[in-house]
Amino acid sequence: MKNIILIGFMGVGKGTIARAFCAHMEMVGLDTDDIIESMENRSIKEVFAAQGEAYFRAKESQVASWLSKHVKNTLISTGGGFFMVENLNKIGTVVYLKSSFEGILERILTHPNAEQKLAKRPLFADKEKAKALFDKRAPLYEKKADIVLHVEGKSIQDIVKELKKRLKR
Ligand SMILES: Nc1ncnc2c1ncn2[C@@H]1O[C@H](COP(=O)(O)OP(=O)(O)OP(=O)(O)O)[C@@H](O)[C@H]1O
Ligand SMILES: O=C(O)C1=C[C@@H](O)[C@@H](O)[C@H](O)C1
Image 1: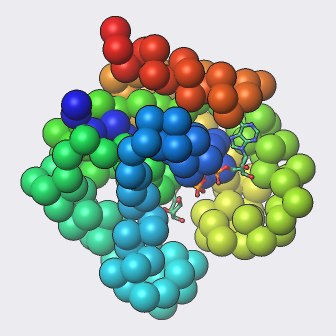
Image 2: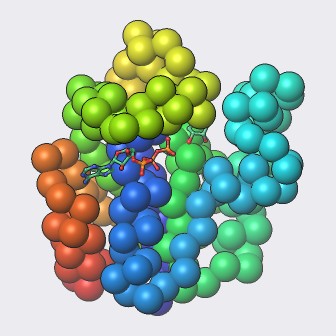
Image 3: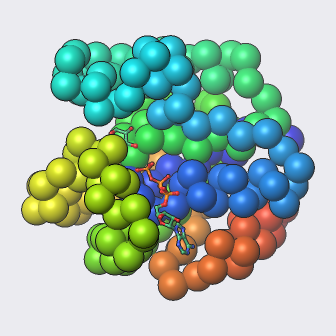
């Protein structure tokens, strides 16, 4: 099996769907944000604050190159901007988790730890800027995707089932 890479905007559910899919399939998953936090031994928020976005993007490219060379049969969830790496489609089958901006915001805000979740995402600090980023990226995510999976209003289990079905086709 090729790797499966979940892409999509911050908060769309990449981590949640990855964990549920891995549990269902008895697979091990990796998350690119988690890998970078571990390499750096600090949070992404701290990386952005201390070194800036360009440094973080360079780390993403380094991780992308390692994934394409050394990782197989794995479900990979990604940071919201990871899709911009040059070799994305060489890593595996790219699945775009798609939702409207309003759908994402509502989900995050209704989560019990909403403040904490938002604080972890530097690019979500300003809602208007986040919306502008979403509008700019939405067509780009589509372009990179082998599979577009609509997640808005669907349960985690239904999304997992649909992903399994679409990957078999
Ligand atoms: N299908 C779903 N139904 C209900 N809640 C969901 C669903 N998918 C995700 N969520 C909730 O939405 C929030 C955001 O999900 P998650 O943290 O997985 O997003 P993400 O895409 O990994 O975000 P980031 O890339 O910013 O880390 C979480 O509170 C999660 O529990
Ligand atoms: O959308 C983005 O560009 C980002 C999303 C987060 O997952 C992190 O990867 C980081 O905060 C950048």
